[in-house]
Image 1: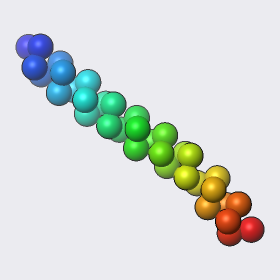
Image 2: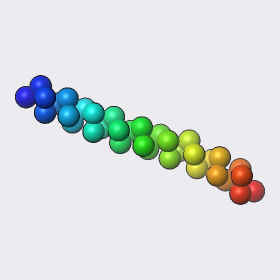
Image 3: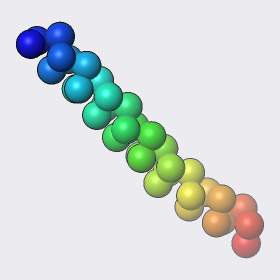
Length: 34
């Protein structure tokens, strides 16, 4: 059960990191475009 919980935790962490990276990159693209 611990292994399954760890896998879910890692998957969630990767999703959060991907979301944060998208949010952090989008403003840079806007500034560069303008």
